[in-house]
Image (cartoon, rainbow, N blue to C red; front, side):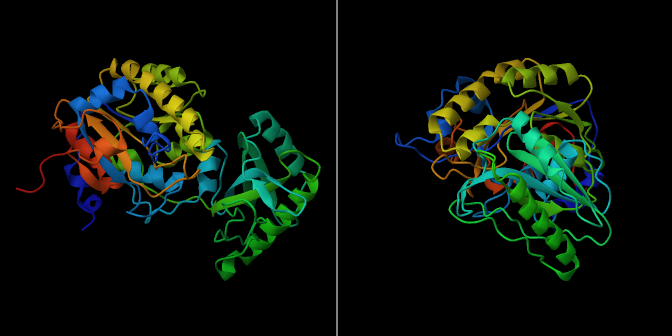
Length: 400
């Protein structure tokens, strides 16, 4: 039986505070020095807490399954990412505070670079500045298609949001993003008959976007993925009795916070801003999701040294967070992004939980090899929120 089915009756409310500090794409693979990015980084604060807490390796979806950011984060908060298959477009829309209506179809877009043969050479167009992305979105607003409204909103750097509004739209459309370079963008294909009209609209939009962007450099084409409509999903308050707040710089992660009923705090990309935002909201909430992005982007770029530096910056914010005195402090990632692969991977993610009630294991450093020997062993990521609730005294005894 799925544990969530009998969890609600034993939920207990109290004033204990829980922090989930998430380094996006935390996990890695060994580089030339035979250490992973996390093992190579100088992380004295995380190592110290690892020596006092309980560690392990958790699977975001299931062993061998590579998660997207949406499924990875849903697992963090105990929502089965297979049961709740939510498209990236919806998360982008909510993160931008776009007024997504029932029946709207949303997709996450990338500005990309294609060569003279139409082959993708860079899926992210060199991570163009957000200001440039906004200029290009304004140009795409020239596209007009009969019978629907099109909304194109800049998100962050090369990312943008596409929303299609109109009657008779289905969201079961295959991605046009091939997820690799050296090939052409994929055609928009419907997965079922009810989405055929949407697929035709997406294909025409993509072709016209290519015409408009033809003379741009480096962003001269678009890729789309994660088509979906607004789902119904229980909030963190309804499910766990948690008054929660999400703190993030990137819209997508604010989107998943908003989807799960969290209050949302927008911050800049500097790590110190995350700590300051947490401090400012400390008295207002009892659960905090704090998102750190740079570990993932450097992993996707294949820049081992940059990911090491990002992890060291991540480590430096830990003392400021601990000064607040959380009752449960959790550090992990939504998935692994090894520089060796330049992409998300299926490898389980290191997890660290520290609280007065944790049972310390023999692990003394926070890294993949060390956490293999941790007290939690290996388990599904959906168990993490339940463990945090237990350590916060928010679960009553089950049964007589």
